[in-house]
Image (cartoon, rainbow, N blue to C red; front, side, top):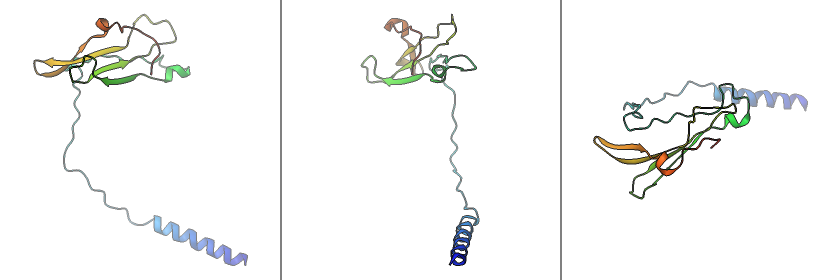
Length: 127
């Protein structure tokens, strides 16, 4: 009886290995080329994200920033709110949260920094 179980087990393992070790399937490659271009400076985004020290020794340093797209001024265009973090050690750089208004520029849509105007120049831990 044990011999039959062993033979059946070996046969089952051989079947699974054989099915999984077949020739590799051809993977289709995309013909269209996609290219990502950094336009942050051109559209007015100069946000610098700060999230704790480089060592990130504390759990709150590992929890980073956040972002929200919403219509801040009711003009029908999505504006951008970026939540920053800080450091456990004293930090005089004051990298605050930022509010960017999506507005019409000379070459299309751009973002204007409205952080001070909206009273959102705060630092602290955020997500």
